[in-house]
Length: 139
Image 1 (cartoon, one colour):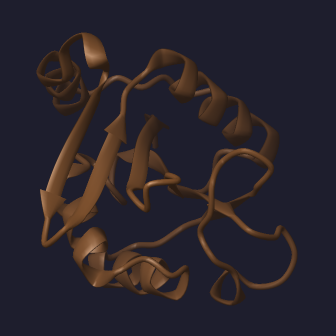
Image 2: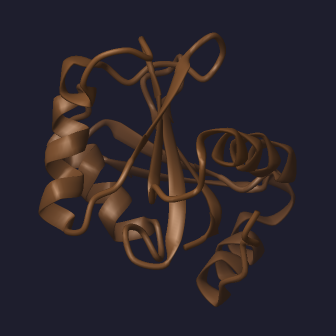
C-alpha cells in the first residue's frame, strides 16, 4: 500500500484540529473532508482489496454493472467502486452520473488537494446529504 504523504494533506490535518474533519458549505450543500486515521485506514484496506490502480473510490448502491448506472450512497453496506479519471471535466461528469450535484463536485475540486493527479480520494454521501471525501494514498 502506498502511503499518504502530502504537504497539502498535512495542512488540512492542521486546520482540522482535534475534529479531524473539515466542512465547506456553499449554496446549502456541504463537502466534508474526513481525515480520521481509522477512516483513511478503512479506505486503504479497500484499495488493497480492489487493487490500487484507480485514483477515485466511490461507495455505491451496487457493485455490478457500469458506474454510470450507479448512485453514490453511504459507506456501510455499500459496494466500493474504483474509477480512474484524467481531467476535472471527467471527475465532474462522473460525480454528476452518480447523483452528486455540480456544486458539490466543484467544492471537491476546490478543496481536495491532489485530486485526480497525486492523491487517491474516496467519496460517499453522509446521512445528512453531505458529500464526504477522504484522502487515501499517494498515486
